[in-house]
Length: 157
Image (cartoon, rainbow, N blue to C red; front, side, top):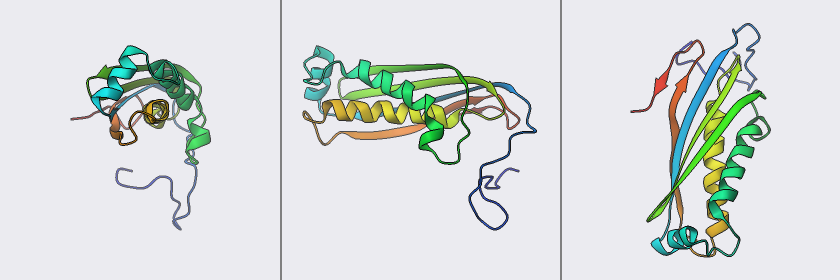
């Protein structure tokens, strides 16, 4: 199955993968990313002077909500009952890093949920702070770790 695009049928049409025969196992995915910004914008977030409010609190809730609603955002994702979503945000001198860990017990993994959590959290940071720095850059959003399932564990280098 490696190398095969599972979301395409034999004619190349998009399809939702049938996971009915797969065993339920504990699945964990960790994703990370960052948003780069001016030191002044980062200082405003740190000092709590952003006009829209607490940037990191809003971003954390936005990321958790995105993980829970990933199947509504990504057309071929299965809706999953998540058992946990942890989203950690760290303020740097020139930006914010995000790290999401998502868990479920199910027939398919939660990689997309972890990636959605990080992406939307960083988008929320941008939205909250864009009046201070419209040149912010979201970067390095990627899967860091995946555990569980039949395809084995993955750890980013």
